[in-house]
Amino acid sequence: MTTTLITNIGELTTNVGPSTGSGTQTHEDGTVQDAAVLIEDGLISWVGPSASSGAQSGSGAQSTPAADEIVDAGGRAVIPGFVDSHSHIVFGGDRAAEFEARMAGQKYAAGGIRSTVAATRRASDDELRARVRGFLDEMLAQGTTTVEIKSGYGLDVETEQRLVRLAAEVTDEVTYLGAHVVPAEYADRSDAYVDLVIGEMLDACAPHAKWIDVFCETGAFSVAQSRRVLEAGITRGLRPRVHASQLGPGEGVQLAIELGAASVDHGTYLTDDDVAALAASDTVLTLLPGVEFSTRQPYPDARRLIDAGVTVAIACDTNPGSSFTSSMPFCIALAVRDMGMTPGEAIWAATAGGAAALQRSDIGVVAPGARADLVLLDAPTRVHLAYRPGVPLVQQVWKDGASVWRKG
Image (cartoon, rainbow, N blue to C red):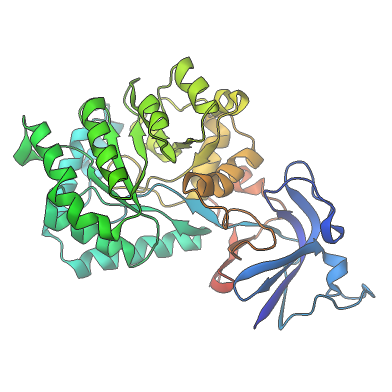
């Protein structure tokens, strides 16, 4: 058994409520001042005052708990590793020209996905694998320790199966998204394509996936088609997620809640009934600030959602068309600046909120028994993630207790 003690933490974000266990004084916002964290075999085993660790020079305290390695945080802030619960990072090609056109005034539409489908089908497994690794390295350097990965850029049986298989090499959180859009070869035959998605394609992909998703939106799939997709996946043991209300109001949010989806993602256009239903449900609403930044659509009003009691997550939605960013700190800054969230709320949404969207209780928090996924910031408080946008503030990252990235 190996142990690591991170001590002299100026501000520790735990995402747990007030308690006095181990002498810890946790504030209402889930922060602890002058804290220490003990890691044993990949898990957090103790959280308490830094003075109690006996690791501070001149503290005079007994050196308990003991550790094989001591890391002095130097008064910096520590937060849980980011949980990115929505990404599309297995793809080929590039859509920079489409982004340039949008910046010149062209409206975003779902159909642009088809150009990525063509490039992805042409790419080899090794090419796709190398690209995924590159994105994961980017994410890790910015504090993301858990990532969900969707398929959806194959849209035929062979390629969709390849995408979920490659995603499963690097994460347990794999989502089958054969119902992303209708591919060109099924133009005007969308019901026939749904038959393929819930038949042969589902058979090929389900063994590699945990989740099933559908883009329930004008230009993608109707509510009736989305229901068929989700119910077929549920029957095969996959858990439902939904893309909805990105391009306009619709019935996708209500469908997601009815079918017990873990999350409904985007939520750019929500009715009062949608908000009330979400607040009364266990379905998480995942906001994707990078999408609004890239598409120039209006930002969702997170203040309205949080005040209504909706559980909110933040994710990057890394994809080549509508949100080609892998930076959770950037998305946090957008959520604070343009969605009405406080820094604490945004960081909770990007950690514990993302964990809730994946129905996980072992990540997104700093508490005994949780996985030791931690981020040391080169800053005295978490507020600096929004206060200093665009500045690389991640100093060190631990995943399952192992130091996996360090600045410099």
